[in-house]
Length: 75
Image 1 (spheres, rainbow, N blue to C red):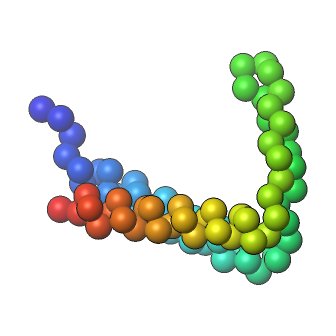
Image 2 (spheres, rainbow, N blue to C red):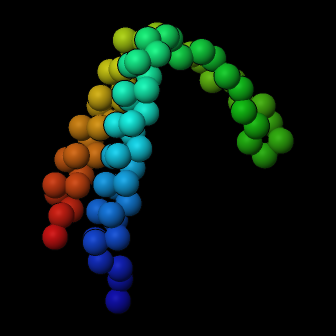
């Protein structure tokens, strides 16, 4: 038997809370997202930065997607 959707909804709700908190913190700072680099399997990955408005739009879209998924998967 497969897992139920209950645990998925719980994880998505937790992710939504974290994302909303991060969004409020980002809005309060009011700064652009700066470029950064990370490593993956020993290779350096360069991430481009985003302007303040681009990042706000991206986070809003992520929040809306999570809310839609939660409402669709609710028991």
